[in-house]
Image 1 (spheres, rainbow, N blue to C red):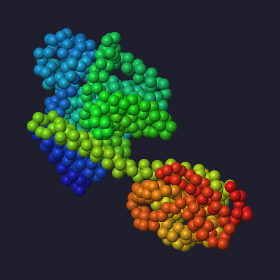
Image 2: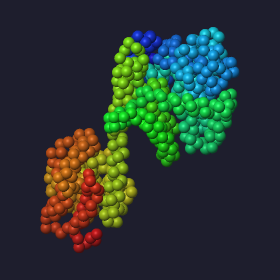
Image 3: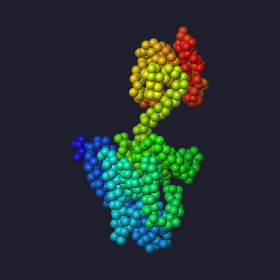
Image 4: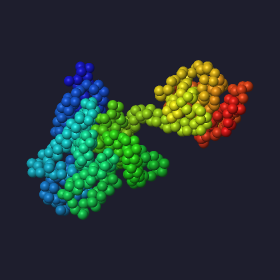
Length: 624
C-alpha cells in the first residue's frame, strides 16, 4: 500500500479514471471524458513521482484498471468493426485481402449491422497477418453476436498487452511499469477501444525481454510478430541484427513466411498496396509537424501543398531510418532507446497520428529516470482530438485547438527538458573547434603535462578541459561568474586583480571574453602579467554598422540562452570593436613591454572573428 501522504493523490487519480470509464462510452459526455482524462494524467504523473507502490501493486492495479474499461463497445473509434468483419469472413474460408466489404462476392455478409458501421468498406483490408489471425479467433464467435466476437478479440489484445506489462516488470522498476500501465490513454485505447497496438506493445516488450536475456531467436520471433501486427515495427529488425547477427534476421524471415502462408495469393500485395496508398493520400489527422509545414506553405503561396508534403515526409523518414541505424551502431544505444528514436521519428513525420498510435512509444518511457515527457504530454492531450466527432459540439474548432495543445505542449515540454543537454552538446562541439584552432598557436612545450594554462573567462570550461584531457596540461579556470561544468579547478575573478603571481602560467586563453568585460584593458594587463608565454585573445569583430547591430543582437541572445540569464548584467559592458581598435587596445595595455601580435581572421558574417596571438618577448619567440 502507498504511504499515507500518497493516498490522496492515488484516490484522486482513481476518481478521475472512474469518471473516464463512465463518461467515455457516451458521445454526449465526451467533454467530461476529455477533462477527466487530462486530470487523471496530471495525477498519474504526481503519483509516479512519489514512487509509492510495489511492483505487485502496480501489476494488480493494471489488471483492475483494464477491467474498468473492458465493458466499452466501440465508440471513440470504429476500427473494431473491421476487426470483427475480417475475422468473420475468414471463418467462411474467405481471404480478407482479396475482397472489399462492398464487393458483390460478399453480398451474403452485407446484411449484418456491422457492414453499415465499417469506416472503409471500399478498401481492401490492410491489417497484417498476425492481426488477421487474432481477428479470426474472434470471428468464430460471430454466431453469438458481433458483440461477443468483439469482446473475444479485445480479450486477446488485453491478454497480450498485460503479458508485456508483466515482462516489463522484469526489466524496469515498479514506477516505470506504472508510468506506462496506468497511463490514462493506455487504459482507453487498450482496454476501452481494443486497438491492435495493444497486441503490438505486448510483443515489443517481449522482444525487449528476450533481447535483455541474450535470446536472439525469441527476440526476433516477438519483434517479427509485432511487425505483422502493425507493419512499421519491422523497421526495428536491423537493431537486432547489430546485436545478434544474421541469426535474428533468418528467424524473422522464417516467422514471416509462416504467418503469411494462410493468406498467400498473388493478388494480395497489389490489393494491400492500393489500400495503403489510398489511406496515405486521403487521411490526415492530428499530425502536428505536417500541419505546421502545410500551414506555412499555404501562408507563403496561398495554395494547398498536402499532396507534396505528405510524400516528402515519407521520404524524409525513409532517409532518417538508415541514419538512425548508423548512429545506433556508432554510439551503442540501448535497444529501447534505439526503438524510441525509430518509432518516435515515424510518428513525428506521419500524416495521421490517432491517439492510439502513440501506444508505440509509451512503454519505452519506462526505462528513464527522467522520461521524455514530451511524448507523455502529446499522448495525453491528444485525447481532445476525439471532440472532432460529436455533432452537437464545435468539433472542428476544438479538434484544432487540441492538435496545437498536444503538439505545442509536447514541444514546449521537450524544449524545457532537453534545452540544457542540447545546449551543452553544442557548447562542447564549439569547444572542440576552438581547441583545434588554439592548439595551432600554442608552443609545443605547453602541450605537455608540465605546462600551466590559464583559461580566463572560461565559461563552462570545455576548452580548458580538452587541453587537460588531451595533453595533461594543468589548466586553471577563472571567470567572474561560475559556469564551470568540468572537474577543473575554478577561481572567481573580480574583473580587476588576478590572484596569481607574475609569470605563473605558460599561456593564457581569452576566448570571446573581453567584449563583455567592464574594464577590458585591466583584464589584458593582468593576463600579460601572469603569463610568461603567449596570450591568445579570440574576439568577435565588426566592419560596418550593420555588422555591429547584428553582432550585438546575436551576442545577447546567445549568452542569455547559454547562461540562463546569469550573464545579463554583463550586457551593460558589451563593447565590440574593429580589428584596428583591438590592436590599439592590446598595444596600449602592453605599455613599455615589447610584444608581437599575430592577427588571424576567422569566421564570416554574421559572426566575424579574429584571433590575436600576443607574444610578450618577440626576441625569444618565433613570430608566425
